[in-house]
Length: 226
Length: 178
Image (cartoon, rainbow over all chains, first blue to last red; front, side, top):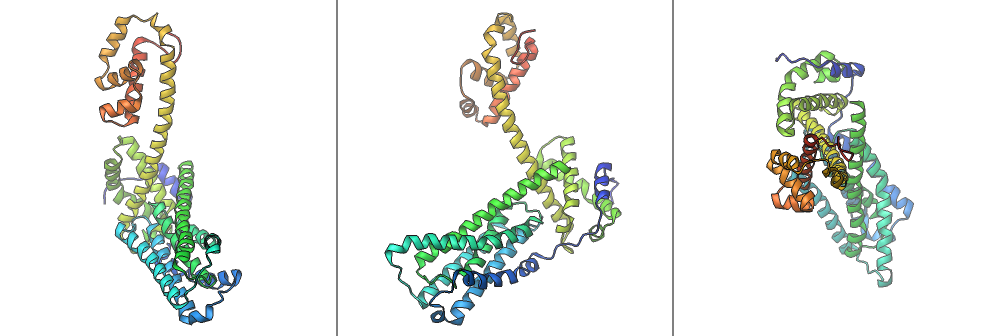
């Protein structure tokens, strides 16, 4: 061992707060802890906004099965975000693009499958209005999980807050939209991709902004302490 | 690290002893700062290590985690330095404009030969930036493009030249001649 001694001011700071701490659980386990939240969204969102009229036509697998799959995909993305937030465990660019790309590809795939099972024709006069309405419903439904996950991630120390925030926003959006799928009867891809996909991406951007803001506040606070 | 998370001070001291030298070397290379600034960064890193000790996940290696925190501290330091430089640039520009606007009055008291001598003694880069801005009226953007440097660097050269000239000619910033 080298002969380096801790400067007195650091030692004093450490001594002041040396209570034992329990290390975080692994990012995967922390993401799994959000499973009840995901399942709650799956039920609460359509229960609040109303169940889609053609739910029975979609069948159990097409409705609940695919929505559960989307919830799991959202949790996986959140797990990636929580890992990104741990110092020294940052994801590679390929892993980030792969995770986000796979999640969005799954969303597009589910949209196409749903449209294949229960095709729906939107009356042209309401096309834009429904996009607008669904966008806001999906975005608002994603805010509670976004807040919960942002809090979890902010307890770590992300080196790239924008990346971690974008990923957890995306995950929150996917989890909320899994419930929206059971509310919105429109399966037309243009509607789903623009309204629901737009909301998911917006939540990703909101997550990035929140994470950067949190990091900024934390940086200011630590300078005040240090 | 596990003992440190359990609240053992000696474990923190051991961690410091093992990693501080490497950390200092890393920060010195990454930050390109002088010795005292690097020491500050090392200290700030260890304080952040202490604040964020929960984020270490045993049994993963400690080094990547600690250097990850160092990158975070370095990032904050750079953002702060960038904000400070931008703030100073604005101040420099304002001060330069103020000094130049009162220059005709001062020139009555300062011999042209003294100004020439003072200018000649300036490093070429600073002198050129100052002359191009204050005499030829080029913007800092134009000077930066001409010398292929950043706008901030152009402002800094001009400002340092102005500071040296003031000191050499005995002029108080924005005020009266001595």
